[in-house]
Length: 271
Length: 271
Image 1 (cartoon, chains in turn purple, blue):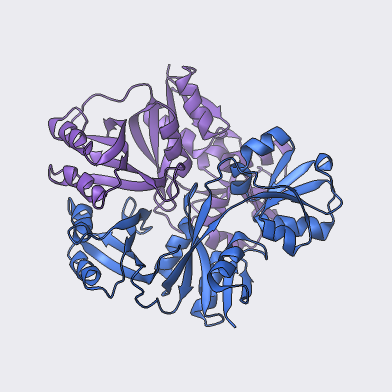
Image 2 (image 1 turned 45 degrees about the horizontal axis):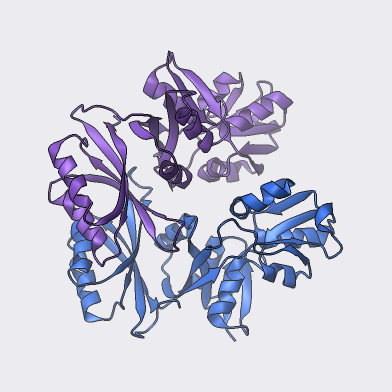
């Protein structure tokens, strides 16, 4: 049986990502923070980890992009989960009895229209599913939490309202971490980190190595290096497997314009 | 006298940015959130606003980048402030009496080494300077806050320790908002937002219009469009003024590869 680390409490959206990718028979290891997910894989406590890297409304999860620089791990897969927030409470709680709503500030913000109309106090917490767990453990009858349907199931709680987010087009993309990346399937993506050399046009020339080989870039993100102010590393995702000739040639040629390159790995594209 | 809106309580790093850019004789208008800063300028309540756009350790302030899309305002200046966190308490408080440290989670995280050695409870709040104000107002004698030296001065509080951040190379870059951008000085930068058309290599060709005119890009950032998942807008800063021929030609030519372009403005480079 596969064992997979994720960040958060049972019922977190990351846990849904684990089951979507590995199937229902997976054993999960909840971790207190993202760093612990990376550590668990590096130390061979688990063969895989799953971390969010990007949300379609909020953008990149910067902390995880930074952790990829620190740890020598590969990306062996990606998985996309639709985020559907529910209002969840103890089974005996009625909607009109709710006086406060707990959740991660990002989840509260994503349900602003619903919650403003609802008009109850909003209390920020560290975690969506963790808020449901807290309501359960404390037996709070006059509060609710914003989290996934799955969180309601796991903690035997009641869904007071479904799909309460303002924007329904809310998806999170997760990377699957392992010691090795994945073999060629023909429908792959590759993720890399690189720093452009300090010359005018170096980013342009770097991207040109992909353009001239008709390699489609699916994502580009800049992050500060933290060594020198206003210097950036670039995170690039492109279509193709690093073992394919046109991709390996592009990566080779990229070396001319990059102060360093780290290949995070090639993996089958998510459906 | 100039009147300038910023987000946060008096003593916030944003307030330091206001004084650094406009001088000590400026009247400030503290706002509860970033949106209120944009609103204050749009509604002519103040002629200028100052908002953080980027930190040299944390990266972009995504919320402000998104607000530039919503509001029809220009960038007329940039200013860079060195962030130096201090541990601040009521004047009668001794270091060894402190049992809890309050601040914005980002500030607490930036002082991790100091605070872990110090070993007191860390309590997240909305604001650095706001935490100092709270200690003052409640007269808390067994707590401290992480904030700027200026916050200690404004609220008549004591600095227990200076410059406590792990990484000293900590700078925040702010944009100055107004109804119009700035005239040519010869040492200018220009900021734009654009969406690349859906064709392979369109980002590369877009950047090429700058590279072939030897225009130096100083920043590129991608943000989700929020309309269609995994579609991005690009935020670009480059050297030069939009009224200079090579810049206006590049912007003109960019139109071929961009679904839309929004010119935020040209402004003198920060020292």
